[in-house]
Length: 121
Image (cartoon, rainbow, N blue to C red; front, side, top):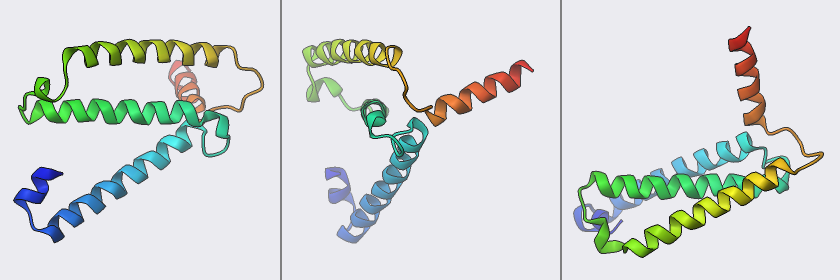
């Protein structure tokens, strides 16, 4: 964003920020719908984990595409701890998912299951 403030007028920067915000809000609403979190609040955690993971990956990809030195912003230890935290969080969420009972069907899983059955037929 600081690059936008330096290179563009304030009104152009505001339009860019509002457009980005609208796009992220739309994608977030679809993620919440596909994960089933819009109907069952117990599914909010996996939805927000997916959103945070996606935004983190996009952040790192955009910095690599701009050919900036990401090591200047983050150190190697942060990468190691973030990867370890992600793996442990994923394992805990998988365990939570596999031991659930009487939970509603997640729409995304239903769509994937339907597509798989359609392909097999």
